[in-house]
Length: 285
Length: 285
Image 1 (spheres, rainbow over the protein chains, first blue to last red):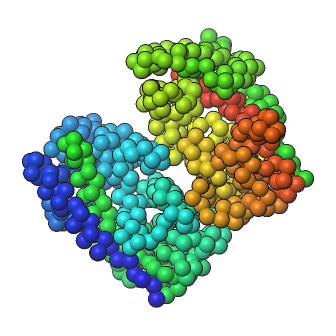
Image 2 (cartoon, chains in turn orange, cyan):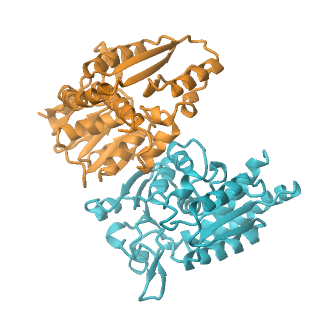
């Protein structure tokens, strides 16, 4: 039976760390504020928005939703982002991705002020993750992986880590964050041969491939800590489930995060921490 | 006995590929031109400069050396770079690193126009390597590794690659370039435990740790292709030598690059290819 690494105590610890920081800012008349830019009304965007709003409230930070029509003109979209860049009462900007085709998938990438780019949508933030220069903020989900490892005291330095998936929002930045803490990281992907054989050698396995229950016991070993980043719709279960086959893997590894209630639940806390940090930097603190 | 993967035929093949491109440009009155910015007169910079000039001449491209005094004022240095950014007869800019302390090690990083950044000194180029966005150019040495693998027909897709070293100019970008071609890459570094055990599982081993003869037979296997990026002074030999113990490793692997005459020799050809590409882009070709 594995230790189940739930997000709830991580969220609680982050909240206790962040509240005094928000109080410091409020004393100076600053309320850490995130602008969420949503184009259209996708269900998953609305769900994330509600979750983020609740989380921010518990910490004392706030969210301003900028809801744009699905058929907004590119020039109006650009103008909105530029105004948010200029608005000193906004410390972070999150643009829901992907944007509609007529705007261009990566339109936000070149527009958002890197200083307000709290979820690594710009090249500058991604470059910062890669170079370790401290520019920008890593993607929230990738950092949520690290927050969970830290909270539960999982050693990273000198450990072998395998990251399954090489997306720019999770796999690749998670690999870089793990290496920055001196893990030896292998990044697996669709073209990897014998992924089970490689993954089963890892002390830390991060599953971020976006395939329901792809990762079974063959990917693991009894001393392994498994971090499941997957958020997949499981039609049998009628709910979300991870990239890891939890029921099969949980009995044979050392520790594992659940889905839901694991990595995903921590991301909005990371988002809040980025907004608070951006607000502090903007205030010269 | 391993196949010795020499740089000379790679250089020759690249030359044959590049000359017609230069001829096309010259027909339009454009001579692909690299500005080398050198502060002071370090021996290794002067040596590289001479080598690059020769290589460029054989291809029909040219180099303009901008030699600055070792005690140049930061504002004068900045002005020089800005002028080169503006100068339409210059297509690429290479600033010898590291810069003197009084200028700041990474001063060039924020100054060079990313379009002219032919050796990945800017964050934008490094971001491009990480994101695969096509922005900028990868570091020449990292790309030289790929040129050698391609020339000698070493399969990359689906292969296991181990990169020893995680510098921003070689290790990390080489790992990204290998992954972009669908290798499964593990990046080893100083804090890696049992590096021999990990490296010896690789089909392709890239040694870029900067330690004379660190990599011995224990890091290898008989089917391995070894790419030695190291350039170290070997006082016994009285010359340069690699990170790989060539005499011990060559008999027990499938293929290996020599030092000198391997990766290092190809880098100036890669540099020329970047300058030519930048010149073509500037001309809208």
